[in-house]
Length: 243
Length: 243
DNA sequence: TTTAAATGTCTATTGATATAGACAACTATA
DNA sequence: TATAGTTGTCTATATCAATAGACATTTAAA
Image 1 (cartoon, chains in turn red, green, cyan, blue):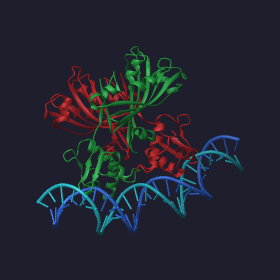
Image 2 (cartoon, rainbow over the protein chains, first blue to last red):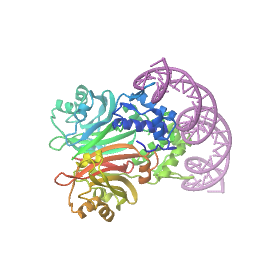
Image 3 (cartoon, chains in turn green, blue, yellow, orange):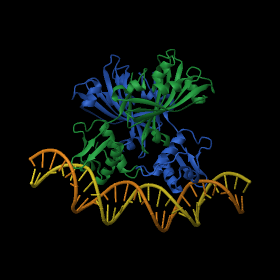
């Protein structure tokens, strides 16, 4: 937690410090007291003025992560970073499972379109084959965790948007459409700064980092049933791959 | 590419714009011309002053991604991203394989120490058990791709630093020490802004993103032989998980 | 009821960030 | 060889970010 902050990088010190404290909270660094260290201590640790620390804490309070109480200290309200296992049987809702009380998947938009080169390659379809596209946001305890664009072969899964809207889960939607089981074939992971669409969908602030996955699910015969590009708030999620 | 930048968020406009342009370059948005659009056009797209765009381009030029030529425009110098497959048989050097001409692993520092709680847990050792620690940097075609801290059980792999320095590869070093095969047991992936140590080791500029993996390799009996924390430049690497 | 420790508020100053406009210098091309 | 289009440089101004110090207010514990 010591490592210094960096100046003149285009990222304000108060934001760097806010990010570091958020990360320390989610790593459990302050679990003993349930409080963030006093402002004067943090200021010394980071080598900055107390007012700069106050700006960082104000930002975290705005996010609902901490609550400053005059005379007592700064209390931790919520500590996050969901662990998302990636296996052959990766399931978003079940994967998060007990880490959050309420998991929801919301359908933002959908439509039928023609597979472009990328979608066709992953779904092993002809270029221009009809596919169902869905834009979704997934939330844990009402906080957005990821937003995704998913494509499905239109001939098999025309009812996907309706099923997803009803069940709020890909797994249950597949089941509704007669596909009782599926497996994760490939997952590609990169990271980038959140773009404007991410900021809006995931309720982030500029400079935030998103983990981006491109994933293919297949049925038990190995036929692709879904290709999805998902964008996760890096502050709220980590991935674990068990081999 | 249109979406607006955001003000008063602790992230300077020039940095938001630099990040967006970098992303657009690696997505191939300017492949037709091999050049970034003129400063005046970018300024209008982002809704900022031309001088702000110039600051962003100066940062990208510093990274070696673009080169501005008076009278002509701003040329794209480099757009790359190595793919790093993560499987049960993950090998760094072989994994990058044909994507780069020359792969090298450099030993920066090493020593014997006592396992702390984290290292002991992953390597399934007693707290305080002796371990070998190695700090390494891996380069593809002389560009740093990742830096890592790795721990090995000291009783089995006391010769690791010497073997790694000679072979420049974990796989070959293990082979030298009598371990002809090993498998990847667990990989955890997160992302964060590069810290000062990353900037130096990976030759990055402040604000850059690193993908962080925590990984355990075991021998064929499932006994942990290595625990490593690696930090990859997100601009240069992506991961692929095949199940 | 003190007192120590913590957050809250205020003023002042400096440096980084962003805007605005004008013009110079260079390149490619008509 | 003009000329349009582009990057480079300069001055000036306004706002945000960060530092510095002083003191008020609240809480919990001695």
